[in-house]
Length: 345
Image 1 (spheres, rainbow, N blue to C red):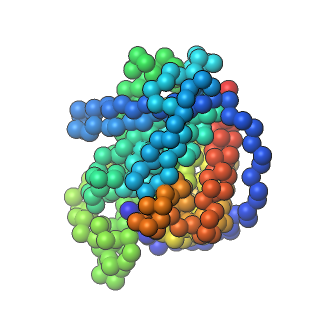
Image 2: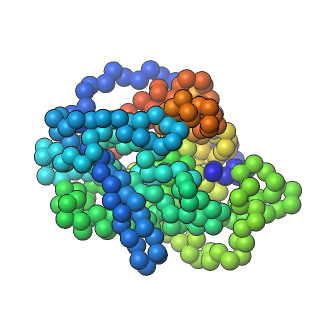
């Protein structure tokens, strides 16, 4: 579920559609593994998915990306490629009510070009385990990644192969919020609390699960604290959640490179008033791509035939049939951004 919150100012829109460049062959096949890391302090078991560079001899086969989405190609359980001793990492965060595997379309592309991608199922705000409390406790999301990163760096299989000086974060919707939180953005629940509890607006779309939350029980010192992880050196956010809620103080802690990929046709967060407002609050060096054909859900995988019937709202783009092209441009933008900011080899 994604929340609609009115935004407060407008900004200029971005570039129009352009044809994606012709791509060279990716240097790696893609491996796939998973693990569970237990955070006893927070009583959270964090299922973690890894996509990573594998040798060309690895046999990739179709892997499921969820009940309503098309599969992706990867080779489960194969060794990490030995082309380099260590690889850069991108932490990949899913949207509210989603799952780690939802960003497979981007994770596989980054892995095929030399990144280890690590995604986590966010307890309380994931498919099969989603609640109003899980949504508003969004600050748990960056804490999930800091814990998993600690665990992975200690893992004898993964730790020695990770370059701890080259770590970035990416995500879609609430995953975009998570990526920004990891580099210094702070959560501001005040606009949500006002909008979803006020008599005039509490019945608005997006407030269905949130209008009855008792926001008085939330410790604002905790919710609005910084959960920046200094190991994360850059962030790439797609249609980021909470885009219309930030005060300037909430993004003042960002000092590393940031990129936004915004959907001009975002049906949940009006583009000019939300995404572009956030862009105007971020440092002048922020990279901003605007995709005219994209809606909010365009950064989910392409839909299967089942998905087109069962969840048409997740399969709809601002321009029909544009998702594959939208993904290609997002893949190119993310790869360019992380290559520049993390120095992939």
